[in-house]
Length: 98
Image (cartoon, rainbow, N blue to C red; front, side, top):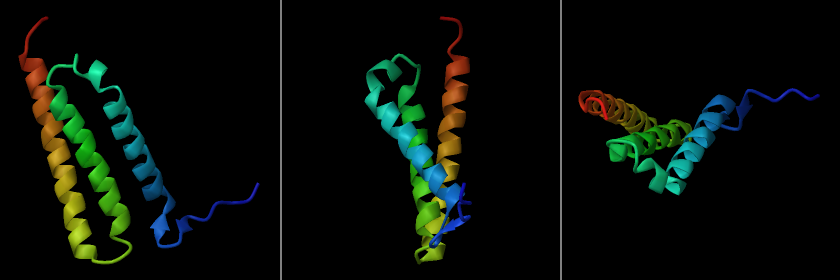
């Protein structure tokens, strides 16, 4: 079996894999949004998935140019994703028993 090179042009395979995974997660969440609406505070959860996808996209785009812009966008997206997940977790646990 041939070895897969660690780089695919200017992109790293692990970063491309992360982007594909993030896109699949976001697409699945949007596809099953009716079912996700049963999850308390579901908008925060989908927002976190969106920022995760944006961060993965920025990670890959920073290899093409304008490193500072895309690197900043990546880190801002991860910070917003983490904030949304934290607020979602806090809101869900503060809700009390069903």
